[in-house]
Structures are given as structure tokens and as C-alpha cells.
Image (cartoon, rainbow, N blue to C red):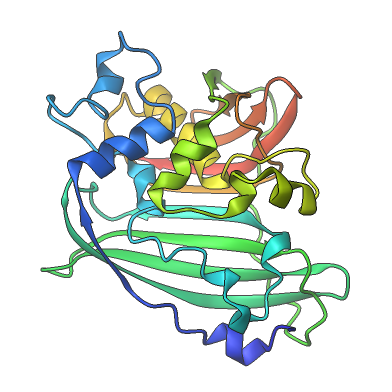
Length: 283
């Protein structure tokens, strides 16, 4: 089944209501590597339920997550061949550690790159307090539909990536991932089998299951929070990045940062960029 432009652009994604618990907040932080250093009390503030718990800003990407909705045959998408291309987060206020939330996700754009070249799907999610309607965060995603070009949609406009500074980064930080980290991360509700099934990974062209792009984002956001924000979540206001290659669970992620807020990340063992064109807005 091929993509029908107007149908996919107006595809109704059900709103998601979530009772966020302190356990959920801790699970997310653990799933992106917080607590790896048990002697660092700043990390423990995000994972120890007996402390004054804090929420990681990057948790916005999993709150009220609509699930793998592109797997629905009605979208016309080849779900086996899609990959996460870009992700942005705007924090309007610090995220809560518990409470009732509502999330609304919609498709905001669809670009046809042509036969054999795939397509780009832009989407946006708003996360609000279910009782007051107060807006916590807005997330924006670009999904690269590798198998779906040539359906007759518009060829643009395509969002331009943020330019990277010239010269060496001002600082870098190495953070490890665990071999089973994707299995922990998928408990946040991101259950694409590409990250757990060797058979599905092989069909998608990978030698083994890959780490969720949003898990790589979480590790990178941790590095930014540590290096540029002093572990103060309220200081991280915006995050925007492009995924350039997958991470395999167990690899080390080196986050390279500039004082301006620009950043990129690489898998150390393969010396390959996995995140590029990153931009963080720090208060």
C-alpha cells in the first residue's frame, strides 16, 4: 500500500493521557544512563526515589508517546524501513516528576524526495497538564521514510540543519551505553522491534538491534545537562539535533560541545558521527 499524501497528512493520531509516576521518571533516567556513577549525587537526584527527585528535560520525548503509529497499514508507510531523522524539544517549563498529562501528536508536513529516495514526515507533539492545560513541552520530529518516495507529494520546503562551528569543540564528555540498554529504553513505550529483534534488524539492513535514536538523544542531553547546565534542568530550554548514524548498544557515546550550545556526538569504538548539527539553548 502506497502513501496517499492528503490521507497521511491528515492522519488522526489519538491523544494520549498518561498518569506520570515517580517510578516512570526514574525509569526514564535509568534507561538513558543516569546512575552509572553511583558516587555522583547529582545523578542520584534523577534516579533515587528517596531524594528530592528531578525530571530530565529530554523525558519530554516519551511523555504521552503515541506508540508506533506508523506501523498502521492505513498510513501507507513501509514501517520496516523508516528511521528517526531529526528531533527537537522546546521546554516551556520544567517537567513534573509525577502528575496527569495529555499529549496530542499531529503530522505537520510530508516531503516526497522522489522514487528510490524516500520521503520525510514532520510531526509535532504537545505535552500539557491534563487538568490545567498548561503546556510543558513541544517536541518536533522528522522521520525518514526510506521506502516511500515517489507518491506525488511536494518536494519542499525541507528544514535546513543548524550549521556547526568551525574549529575544535570546547569540551567533550564520554558516556557509556549498556549492551541491554535498548531493552530498558523500550519500557518507556517506544516498542519498535528494530531495537529488540535480531530478525527485524537484519531485514532492515543492520547486523543487530540498534539503540533507539531517542535513547541516544537522552544520553546526549545528559552530557549537555552535566557540562553546560550544572545538572539544573530548568536551564535547558531547547534542544535540536539530526541523527546521522545508529548506535549499537554497548558503545561509548562521545558528546562534543561548544560554549555556544552547538554539539555533536560520535560512537567512539567506530569513530562515526551519530548525532550532528546539534543546538542547545541554555538559560
